[in-house]
Image 1: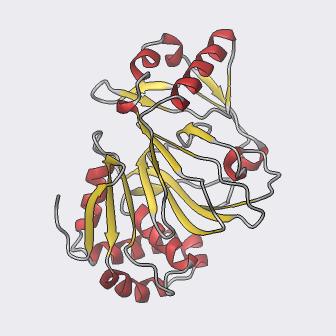
Image 2: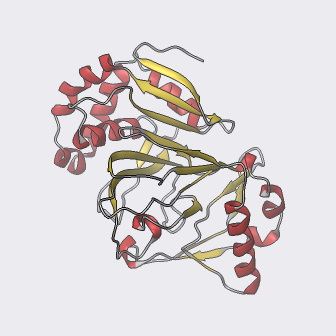
Length: 303
């Protein structure tokens, strides 16, 4: 594996498909000055500033980090990496992590507007009690495997999730499944119903006032399966589609080939949204539970 000064690069303990990238203290220290040049309001309102801090990060690795990340996430054999500070210090607060996540995302592609948050990123807090209309904030329910962007018109090539904070947390591990490791992929991919157009809606909290149509399965340029699926939002048109979705949901959740990992505070996981599915295990009940996650999703740069 390539060596890059200021980074420690290794295979993930739980999966050879996932690459770990630890950012050494020397780079983190050198990011503080350029990151302090812009507050979060500037980043939210002036899109070009996001590329400025992305360049600051890439320059500190002689432009090798961007090449590494893009080579991983576009490669079908991997397509996923975990990146973050090797050591968490008092200087690494929520604002720093949002800026670091922004820089990482803008070395991969262009983020989509997140309608729920009203900007290019969204922050989600999971607590003991929840009255929301989706599984995202429901701490004690399993969040089934899914991909992002199923109900929007924007292209969603990749997804970034950063753990900003957690306290009094047990459980809530991230579950990942690569399509090429899924035992039932061939069977369901070859079912013609999966190539039909399904209607995909969304609850009110998503702030999307339209529905989209697309199949569950498609193919990449090499004829391998891609998937666009989430269990909460499809609206089956008939019995065949409804039964197909049930088979699909059961087969995903029964898979023995999931990678289950505990993301540390400050770390981000970035995955190709076409052949990686992600979910979350339930948290153990605790009235003081608190966890915050940041999400950015978007499209690849066009070469």
